[in-house]
Length: 372
Image 1 (cartoon, one colour):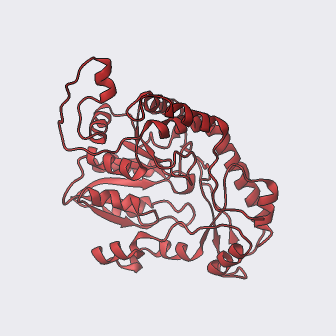
Image 2 (cartoon, rainbow, N blue to C red):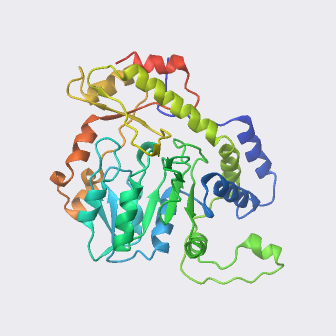
Image 3 (cartoon, rainbow, N blue to C red):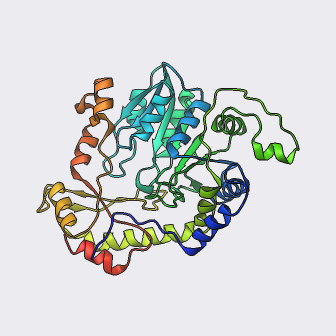
């Protein structure tokens, strides 16, 4: 049996949507993008959604729209993918790396407080693995210090904190549609906000700082447009928008399957000595983009030995993530000290992400857990 770490779920409806788009005139800046954005608003309870070429670009646009620039600081978790920090650097600002919680792997609110300076321009929180950060405490800090919050929701489409959907709690939310994510468009992302001014700013920056898009000009029978600011080409094309719209129709089914698989994993691994199963914190709806176990020293193998054993049994796993303070580029540039991030240092030695995707069968789940 061969079980990959991830497997995109592309069905016949998805394929038809893409083929139909290829037979249409608009391949970018067209009606599919609007349909996708409107549907996303409806599902995620957002006022405004903007499709973008990648989630990294979405983070960049979000920070730019908040005025992040040269000399500013942006607080982020160290336990995340590099895109979170890269977007800060694209703004010529400085990422301020912060330690994370040992159970949820999310940024620690008390550590955020310690990192705030007069140069802090924004806080980026990452809802790791599909579980929300402690947004009550983070929003308290945001309000007290008047610092905006960007939610990196790359893992968290459909996840909630209390009654609020991730991506609607802070000032801006950014979602990913990479092939490993909850839904996929190959590459792509979505930016959400409830702030009309941020929406207008991001929409302009997304398409070269243009004040009116080609499809909008056609409707008005006008050729004229203006470039009102320096922007980017971060648009989501019609083909990927069609695929995303089709996939979004079964979001609840996808997340239902993920939660069921996670539950079965936990039942089968709960009594394995030295294996620590994921913890779901109070007031969260964890949708399990990742199923991340911790391999304790009391287990018979080290984490790396377990990784190798599972690989030899044709089971794909991953370590997400190697903390950014250990990455050569950031470590050298900012002279980062390993001792400042004790939790992340321990997690990178313990964590192992098991395969999880909606099409997983009970037989496959049992095959994975039988190796422990």
